[in-house]
Picture 1 (tube, rainbow, N blue to C red):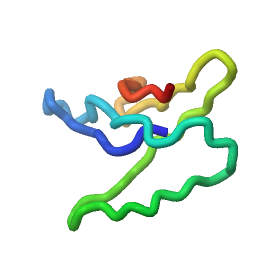
Picture 2 (picture 1 turned 30 degrees about the vertical axis):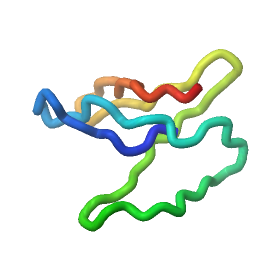
Picture 3 (picture 1 turned 180 degrees about the horizontal axis):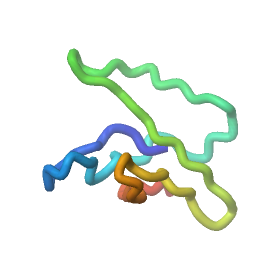
Length: 74
């Protein structure tokens, strides 16, 4: 489950990365994050599925380009 990130270094309006792996191998239907983001910031998460061979896609951005997964969970 990547979290945070979202930097737009090339300033094309799209995130260049989607953060690091926050949690992996979750088998429950929900996870809890008890941390609080700094004032005027937020936490957000992209959730991927995983099978026996690989982690799934982060999906597509608003331009229908696949999101890069630079924070692959181990």
